[in-house]
Length: 168
Length: 421
Image (cartoon, rainbow over all chains, first blue to last red; front, side):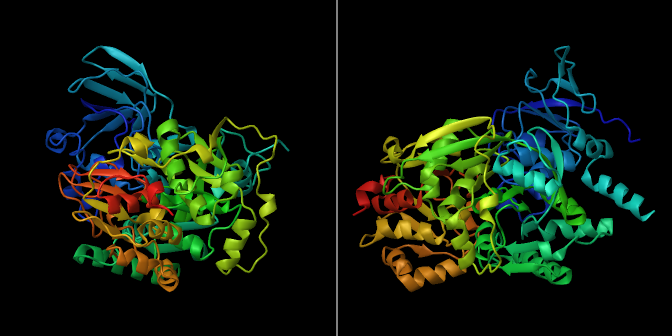
């Protein structure tokens, strides 16, 4: 059994349709991840990369991650230490990429949070606690087919386990 | 057996089931896997090594180098070299700098009706033009697919877009998709979009590709068109010798669909999308007089031979406006050659167009043609997200190749219908 995945941090709140060029701008795609991550969200919030701290939670509206299949859009957030993304809705490739890379992505339509609110996210149970507002919110469940991958910490650890089991 | 839509039939076949229903999660066997130089070997090679795993079936894997071609700097050159080495070492087909992946796959007849295909690129729905179910995924998932030869899919609901009434002169599939982005929005991830109707049946394969391609902008799972005699003719022209059972791959007439949207193509005027989203589309008349620094004809969406011909129709005997630059990056070298043979290329260059190398280029913020802060561009590409083509302070509009060419001549956004004989 993997340890339960729980993430706690400050909320960074964004609007609808945060696209993959905002998350991982095309002009920096050839660069190492650390350099790319410094430009994450700069088109909508130039100070984001310098203010975000490990464990912080990104909150988005509908269509979070719309656009390219580039998984650097997820990896830039992981590189900055983002602990989870909660949104009203995700673009399909971003959602798959996030869970495959071990970044909890949760759909929650009624989450109310302002920048700086202290959030705690329980991906497996499917709930979010806003400690600042003392409110709890339910999330849409992660599809069962993906829960194994999420519980393993992502697709690579899941594949390692599966291939290891086959070899052993 | 229950009545099924075309996408459901393909998923059922790939999953080895008699039938599937929306919401069901199925594991599909992959008939074709495509990846490119940006999301491909560069990002999967080390992961495969870490897993000690090999490609499940090299005959089903195709690598296309199209993002960093031709190398403009050392970073790009090293990525391209790694891609070549990996493709050779793993015995997979590699198209190296001869065109944009979605276009190259169809030029060479790799995608066939009824196939289940996976692409390491968000515009992979383009494969639906041939009557295949093709989805885009990221590089970690491509790694898993390369190892297992499978991909899980949550069977989507079918959204049918019926387009009847032939598109008017100067109006293209691109205008239809911009209109749909504005009316349906970009959050349609629960749907696979099936494009049907007499106007779709009348479209060329290149124009059907645009419909399916920009299903990515609708946020759909993928897009698809029922294969027909046009599909068969294109596959024959691509050198496919085997029989093509396209009649098998149709939606049952009584198959339920979640939603139907009807469009009268004959009444649709040219569309343009304002910065910074394809969903900001409106009739071109509402945007005329917006001054243009750069007009860009490029990408899988907007620089195929048919797109170059649209631009040439407008540009014939005209010149690009002073103070405006027109850049053209054809979608494949074979299309560039054909455009040269038939005279289309001369029409473009005589009008003052600057010819760029084939590849994804400035559409992906990767090649020549980047924008400075404060500049305004109109492009035949699929996306105008903030910062995508250069500075986050540049403004990108989207339009059809007709509209981009007309705007280049006028120096401001212009309705192409006034430029057609």
